[in-house]
Structures are given as structure tokens and as C-alpha cells.
Image (cartoon, rainbow over all chains, first blue to last red; front, side, top):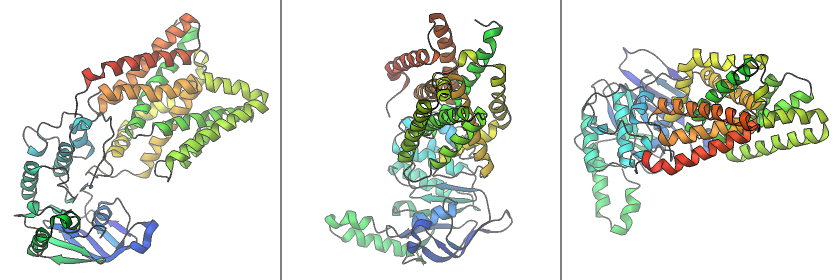
Length: 234
Length: 261
């Protein structure tokens, strides 16, 4: 059951209550039951192995997928969700300004958002993958959402863009709740985030240090194994 | 050319051409051009069926194409295969009706070749429905079109209720049905496909794209109308030949409009 409550006074943004998540076509692989509360101002990074259900959880929270069992209560309608990939048609005559309008975001003035600076008046099909990701991210941040959900936001971004993204995450309003998945420790460094690890159909809370330990372990393994391991460790 | 005999056909044809250009642009944005073509084919089959059974043309064609549209909706599994199957089935139905029932031949001729120079004032009244829907519900239509673009992302724009999607789907269906009835299946499908295609290469932005597609469609209609009348040729082939030549010209000039990624 999905409940949507318009009670802006509450500090809760969303709450999973004994919620089972999954695809109705494959109930056997359902995730849960999950009991998690997201509150205003909280910042979470979701980690877990490939296929552990990170994107599934984010999609469910964003309303893209229904929950299979239990209850998900959403206390705001102002949710912005950036999916892991957004493929573009070969010919797509929309501009960055159109994208902002479609996302319900305010049109940025001047250099209000360095992430999308100089990109908004261009056709979206003429942007590189990294530029497209920057426009998408910028629109999410400009949407004034109470809950921001980012699925691998550093995809396609170069080092400079990742720095801009980290700055933007630092500057999020204090009442905004953030939930994201990322395999990029550089992004999380310096961010005051709690880490949630999805493992064996349940969520464990981890400290950031634990995550870093896992990453240093990854660095020690041989080059041959590295790419395989890196895809499993956040 | 615009004396009293031609006025209703011209106004109706120009209006439906403009609207088909708009509908085609929104189908193009959703990569749903094939669905538009199948809806057109099914509208023609439904129209021929209605003629044979002495039923009202537009409502039956609308119902028939709505049914086909439902069976081939975008979220359905194997959508491409379903579209092709529906296209073939509608074609088979029309062929069988034409071969076996004499009066179906006349009806099919109208749906396939178009009747643009003989649109009556009575026919034209049907156009008031999509025009009114566009005038009154443009914001709803635009939000549905925009919503289709942001998926799988989600923004803070208010969520759309189911009736808004139904409103937009009905508007599209009605336009395609009326387009096929007025201009004939090939001309209507051509105006759904080509103006949007051309506009997509040169427009810079959502609204300019919609407007440009509609205007290209309108201009193609007007030129084809005049040329076909002047040369005493059928309307559809002239429209398709002129439009294709125009598209080829745009394609050759494309490097001047588009920059590389």
C-alpha cells in the first residue's frame, strides 16, 4: 500500500513499514520486509552488491514501481528522482530549458548552477553523456524537492563535474532529504552522510569508515580482479 | 480556388493538416510513430467495416482504432511485434471486405485515396472536437507530452491523473481517424510522419518543434492542394512527392543546421 500525505509540518519524508519491494513478475526475488524512515535533512548513501536491490528501492520510493506488500508512506509530493540512465533519442529537439520546465524546476538565472552553466540553450541530443548528466542533475537540484533520490549520480561525470556535484550536495537545503546510490568514494568524502547497506534482503546501517575499508580492500587485489570486484563494492 | 465550393474542403483540410503535424510531433517525441501508423490503418479498416454495416463512420472507426491502440499500447510486451501484427490484420480485413462486399470497395477508396476536395460542411463539424480539446485542454496535453519525456526520471511537477492520459489519447485517436477520413490513409500518415521528422532536425526547443512541425504540415497541404488541383492529379501522391522532395532538401542542408556532439 502506498500512502501519500500532504503534511508538510512533519519531519518525516517517507517511511517503509514492513515493505516488500520487487517486480510483480518476479515475486520470488522480492526485497524486504524493510523498515526505514527518511526524515528531513537526512543524507543517505545506499550501498550493496550488484543486484542487491538498490535501484529497486530507489524506484519504489520515487513511485516508479509499486510495493508488493506492507506500506510505504510518502509525506511529500515534492520528490525528484534521477534514474541510473536516461537514454536519449538520436534526434531530440528539446533544450536544457525544456528539461528544467518538464522537471518542474525553476529556470536558473545567470551562473546560478555551475553544473549546467552554458548547456541549457543547447539541444539535448547534442550534449555529450557527461553534459547530459549535468543538466539532469542540475534540474533535480533546482526542482526544490523535499526528497532527492539519485541513482549513481556520478555516471559519465569527469573529475571536475564530480567536484561541482559534491559542492551542490553540500549546499542542499537543510530540510531536504537525500538518498542516493554511489560507488564513488570521492563523492562521499566530506559529505555528512549515513550509509545504508543492502545485504541479503535487509538493510544494515554502516559508518562511512566501514565503506572506506571495503574500498581499500578492493585496491589491494590484483589488477585482473579489480574490475570485477569494483563492480561489487560500493 | 476558394469560392464557396472549395471553402469547406480547404478549411477542413488545412485544419486537419495543422493538427496532424502537431500530433505527429508528439508521437515523434515518444518514438511512437509506428503506433500512429497502425492507428491510421485500423481507423481505415474500421471505417470500411462501418460502411459495410451501414453504421456511423467516425464513431466506429474511432472505436476500432481505440481497441487496436489498447492492444498495442507502449507498455505492452513485444510491442513492435504487436504493431506489425495489427497492421497486417487490419490490411487483411480491408482486403477481404473489398473483395467480398461490393460497397466496401467504394468506402475503401475514400479511406485509402482521400476525399479532400469533397469534404462536406457536415464532415467538418467533427473537427470542432479536437480543436476545442486543444484550445481548452492545451495545458493538459502539454503536460502529458512533457511527462513522456522525463521518464524514467521524475521531477517535482504534480503527478498526472489517469483521465489526463485518456484525454490526450482520445485527442490523438480522433485526429488520426479524421485525418484518414479527410485526406486518405497515405496522406494522413505522411503528415504524421514527415513534418515532425523534418522539424526535429531544425527546431531548437519543445514548443518551436511542435509549432514548426504543424506549420510544415500546413504549408505542405496548401502547396499540394494547389498543385494537385492545377495538374488535375490526386491529392495524396502529390503531397507525398512534394513532401519527400522537401525532406530531401532539408536532409542535404542538415549539416548547416546541426552541429556534432
